[in-house]
Image (cartoon, rainbow, N blue to C red):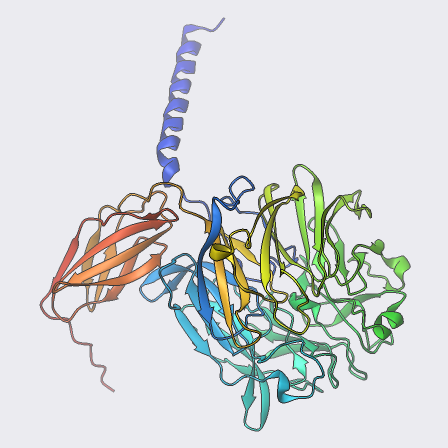
Length: 619
């Protein structure tokens, strides 16, 4: 039995809990889920390809009725790079979510990541005339035409700087330059650009194919070849992220040839100690200074720490079966690094002890797919455990499951369709932690993409049951078709949207990217309240209250009867613009989400009789 005092205390505690619950319910609609950035290729430094903070897109709502293309953007040439997404970036007078895309015409574009009406880029820069595949006798069409920017750039965690490499005609030759760009404007920052140089480095022959890596205050740039045309080497070069001074050079074949770091565009991987993992392709091998067909572990200054080479490396080299076609993927929570090559054999290796020469040093190796392996995704599912997804060239889509620290060598799941061309699918995965997983697969719809552009298709599968296709971009092609497949560019999934690179509509010279998401299915948000406009010197500051369910805001101004859109796609409830010379300006704001735009807010007015003149500085 409880005493009277105990019962009173219990009633009081119950009342406090109820009040807290009521407060939580009232506040909950105003809480916005944390936005997700994709600042590096394949999402993280382990190159797992997974976004585990996707709370909008789920197997239950990704279908042709509820999901489709929201908008597309046309750019000046083909995109070989994965789109990157940075949220809440200050550009001009307001904040935007930004998607960064690059083209082989040496262009970099920053587009609003959400606003379907914002057809013009927030900024666009071009680095000058790019090299072309026909500037040398490369002997094949690994790239169809221009080859200015090929490797996916990288953005720093502070979202202030974008690092990118461009191949540009310079004087009577060519130069590759590392740029550090202001993410807000696209302008080169101090010390940028720097010309990439190393002993034996030929700017035209070296293909900057792998994505850039930013780790521990340094930027790393990797190199492959075009069509194995000599002379070339595999290079990894390091630069201080602030000064852009070169801090290290690693050449995989200094006294030989080849051993490129290609990786089908995948960036080097990094462990929690800052050690860097790359895989090399065909070329010279002597087990000391020349390390083709090998997994390599390097320290941040690019000193070689350890390596692994398969027993049959000479045969791999002879048959052009590059080991590095998938790059290296680090398995979270383990010491495992995995990767596979054109032979279709998957290697699972203890990254603490790579073991040097011989298959016996691998944790395991087995025939995981029938031919080239170009893309790997890892996910830990609450339902099925740790899974590895791949869809190789000329093979079926397969999923393998980890058991006891190894992969079961019999596929856990497969799909019946067989891809018949190069290079197979580029994969990404979205999930809310260990649940609601969706596997996204970008691939050509038919034919072979080795030497030409082919029509593309984006698939969405239930990651817990890939037999269940949720949607694909050709179910309703009039709405969702993104045209030609961008060879080896994985889709980017973030904040309820999927960003897909495309080669556009022609074999060369065209490019675009498409943005997919949930289609309108409910009411637009409420109109913003408490809009205020304040004159501050030569500027006007406009602010308003946040709106539940709003994704972005559009600000409109009217002066002398003429209205204009001041800014759209704003992610924060404020904006600053230059003040008019004189007169009255009226501001209204609308809240926007996937269901549409709210009605206009109330009006905030400012009247200016004379804008203060700029203060003169006497010297």
